[in-house]
Image (cartoon, rainbow, N blue to C red; front, top):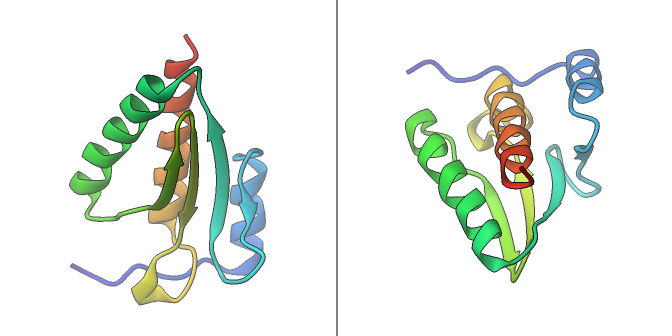
Length: 102
């Protein structure tokens, strides 16, 4: 499998315009988002959906969960920053979160 190319600053800015709830991480080249759900079951269902997709993509999020909150950081480690894989996974996560809200 070919290594993913790190997005340029311009590509990343354009991608984030389409992902308004995501932001650049303050301490490294990554994107982050905080999700909040009705309860733990909804947060866990969201994480399960995301985990199944991430496994198919062979691209895994960094995340932290407490009760109904899920904090996500996405970066492609072998590229040293954000790639299209991260943007695709972020967009899918946004869709899964919307499904969780009904």
